Image 1 (cartoon, helix red, strand yellow):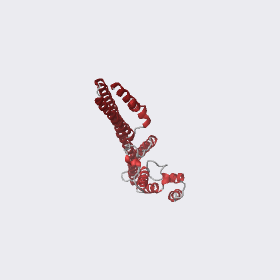
Image 2 (image 1 turned 180 degrees about the vertical axis):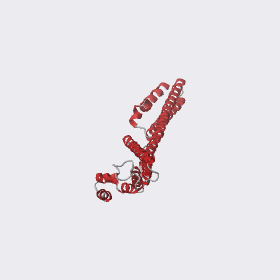
Image 3 (image 1 turned 120 degrees about the vertical axis):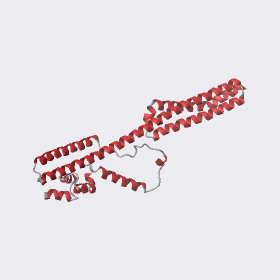
Image 4 (image 1 turned 30 degrees about the horizontal axis):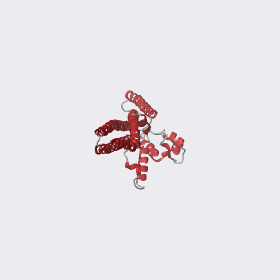
Amino acid sequence: MEAWHARLLNPATAPDIRATALRNLAVDSPWRQAVLRYDSRLWELFPAECAVFTMEAEDDQGHTSNSGGGGSDSDSHASSPMEHVQQPASIPQLHALAADVCTRLAAYASVSSAAAASVCTDVDAKEHVVQALAQVRAMLRQFDAAAAKHEEVATLALESARMQHQAIQELSRVVRQAGDDVATAVVNVKAAVDRGSRDEVDSAVQQRCTVRGMAVDNVRAASRKCVECGMDANYLEESSTGSLARTFLDKMEDDADTDATTGTLVQVLLL
């Protein structure tokens, strides 16, 4: 008893040895909680119990770094809701917590049965029941906290997916509208050429250039929005909508390169 007390209370004790000593204390023991809070070396060995301490430390570090200077270029654009989320306990850790809950429940069932079979004045038996229930509730609180973190991450993932879905749908709509607008402007140029009026041709060509520029700007803005809301750029390029957007932009760039030659040919035809 004295040996594990000494190992537990000595901050210089190796983490694994101190962890072994710590396991002699109940989960809801104030001593256990105090040792875990102030010895960050143990946090990796007790991830579920120390999750709140880890988050507090990261929050403090984040506040310190934020107060050190002005904003950066990255502050100027939107980010995914998942970007700054701390990952919850792993599934194996959840399984371990669930197993601990079952163990505590089994212990409670055992002492409860023993207390029921004991005489009414058996204080020790009744006290064991209360202690076992306290340990069950402590483990349930840990499990609930871990499950709540998973729920938070899942909710943010859902929100991020909805944002990205809306962004890719908007990109699809913008690409279709841009294509229609440019096609209409091209038809207007051809109609002006058929009518043979240089003024009408010049006006139609100018309008086509304006429409094409707006279309390109709109498609690029919609593409940026997809990336800014957390969508992977490679996924965007490989998706059907992203591929259509890239094809449209490439076509508009090629059209712009041939504008001067096309304009000269039209003017020659009208002379």
